[in-house]
Structures are given as C-alpha cells and as structure tokens.
Image (tube, rainbow, N blue to C red; front, side):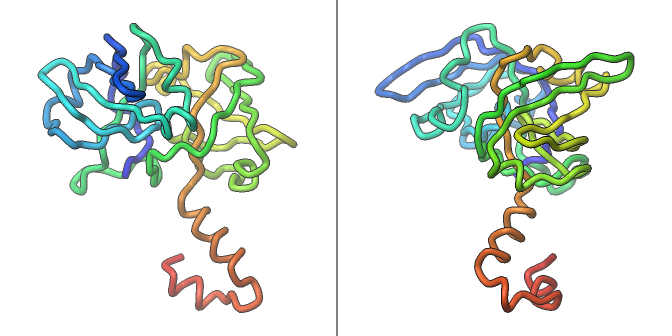
Length: 210
C-alpha cells in the first residue's frame, strides 16, 4: 500500500535481462535507509519487489505481466523514476490509497503552462474515465493528484511547482505515456453496484465500510 507521495527521484543505472525477466538497478539515497530484501517499492507507480540493495542503490525485477501493462520495458539507463516506499503505519497519510497496480497507460495529449501551474491533459479509456470524478484522486506515474476536469476521452491535472520539483512529471512531454491507477475505494463501490443494484441500500454500503 502506498500514498502517492513521492519520496525521492531515483536514476536507473543499469538494465539487465535474464530469461524474460528485466532487472532495474536504481540509484537512490533516502529510501535505502531502512530497506530490506522483499520490500515493495513504487517505481513510477508500479509496485516492484527489492531483490538486492546497498547504501546508494537497489535492484527490482519486472516480469512480463508487469511489462505488458506498463512502459517499464522502455525505461533505459539514466532514466529518472519516481520512488516511494510502502506506507508506514506510523507516518502521515498525505495522499490517498494507492496499490501500485497500474490500471492502464495514459497518453499526454496537451500541456499548458502558466505562472503557477502546469496543466496536463491525459487521454485514457472510458473504463478509467468512468472511475474518475472532478476533484477526486488519480495516481499518475505514482503521484497522487487531483482530477481538475474531465473531457470526453481525457482528464486534466494541475502540477504545482512543488510537484514539478519533487517528481519526474515536470519532464514529461507531449505524446509521452504515463501509468494510471484509479482510486481503489471507487473500484469497490463500482463492484458492489454492478453486482446487485436492486438490493443496494445505504445500510448495506455502511456495512461494507463506506
């Protein structure tokens, strides 16, 4: 479980392939302080498992199933990536519930700059769009963001200066792919509604924790 608050920007120092498994070596400093083998790390929003680490770097593996849903197969040496450790029970919960399970690839279709923010329009499928609400949460490349507007086949996010400084989203260009993950709480509600609309009541939703 993650929050979508990026802790550090890492740099990919090496990419290795062995029997269809891709290994990424990533240079980092902050998140290696309390790292362990088997830890879950969000790399651009994809939950990956630590297989090796030292004080200044760590390694994660990407299997084919993950590659098929992400652009991690396109990541090369010197690429920068958003990094976040799994949520700590003693920490502040600053973003929203993020699983690190990428739903699909979105594509940046428009970028508009102004003095205080960068407005980015991202194309996505109707499945993702139907799971979004204005002022609701969306994870883009592992970053918890607010949906500021919805269109027929896209949505807008606003990147404030702090988000541009502390994540790789400031380097994204027109036509680039991004990892999208919608709010898991919305998915649960959608699943309950689709199973039995006729018998759904407020009391039943409350019993499910909503």
